[in-house]
Image 1 (cartoon, rainbow, N blue to C red):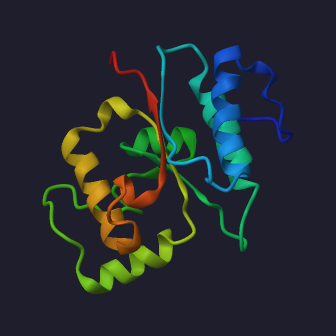
Image 2 (cartoon, one colour):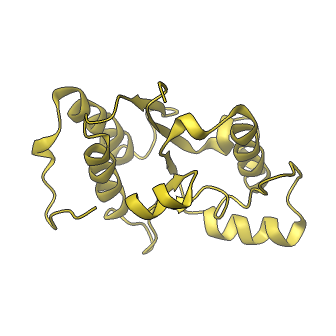
Length: 165
């Protein structure tokens, strides 16, 4: 996916621009607006990838301590490559078959990798089943025990895709 190097969301529809503004305002306000749990859905051809790009760009270029507060995930390697995301099983340390708590050494590494992450965008939400959602939630709650009472370990989540797939 080739993009221009400047930030210009002029290709977004009114609804997409509204979605972008919700996420960006939430980010600028430091997440003090409360939990952000958002679903952006639509059929093929409505340029969800443009919206994803602008959200990723806006949050990733607003770095704290030289680390982006944003993690962009996709469930498959092909989709990850096409949209420059990470495969969901990699950064979240989720095994593909077993649902187990993280061993202590993996938990420490996972915490170090995730401690600056506040926003998680998951593309192709139709590929994400309840089991994988439970695993993501469980691992983030493990890594952030201070947010154990909050879904997804207190992270802000944006799901994107076409549920009709």
